[in-house]
Length: 421
Image (cartoon, rainbow, N blue to C red):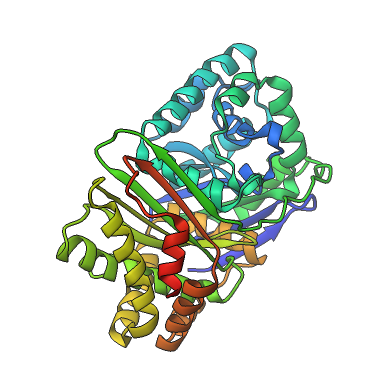
């Protein structure tokens, strides 16, 4: 498999990877505009815009957009994250030109009709309501808010209800004008794809676009930390703890991921074995390391009863502290293997591979080989993991979010004292 890249004169980047033996392909546009690129009065507009892209163009109705892709057995979708928005489709080999044409159409020629805006506003308000009714979902939004208070990176992607109720056509068009320039777009395709044919088509569809006016740089992230405790009579207390970690350009990100995986990444991990298997305190518990362009955090989540939250929280801290002291070579080796296997298995999917191409190109300006990533994971040793664990325990910023009958849950201050003891 060969990765090929090309940049149009207006700055739009194209990256493709042919995967021999496949009869299908995944293709999409990744735009470097997400939640953290919004001003406070725009909070939620990137996600609203993603919804509106499918509501019709001058050439296609909303129904026709869906029908043209589904008539050929494909699917089309989109998502908004804190750092980018993606519009993508999965189709058979012969239908790649159709998928690119549809994606170009919804990005370059959306109608933004007021009636459709009002309909989609209702959909998004229902989505917000669903998130608020899903404790193990909303608790992560609250965790993000207390980790990065009063910053774009800490705001919810969906936006607050009062903002969403007020968005209109000018707000949507304004965000497009600020952030949807070709120099902020990456077209990525993987599977049964022809690089030269895709480049020619993208040149025809996007080559006329002028670079967007310079947008304000996103506000630099600053992990502050803090605690949010929302008391409600639920069946469980939802516990989410975050500790400041490296950004995704920091070589230490691989160490952070290995440490998080060994701590709570699978059924053999320390948190799962001690807190679920040995103590029976929860059904779900996990740890993961996430990262942004200029910040990152390791997150631990669990759900348990009001009577057991104190024990669960304290045991979680004890396992973190102990991991920094006596993590074994076998645990580190297992965590590395799980990471590599998960990555390699995932990259058998053209959708996952197309997303990786876009993300790597946006981060590094080139696409590191899979072999290079494997080598970086393999380079993480036992002492690296222990040092990272110790530094995280004693010096990292921390944030805590609790939702449910959390009256008996320990405070963040108490947990930090226990972690550093």
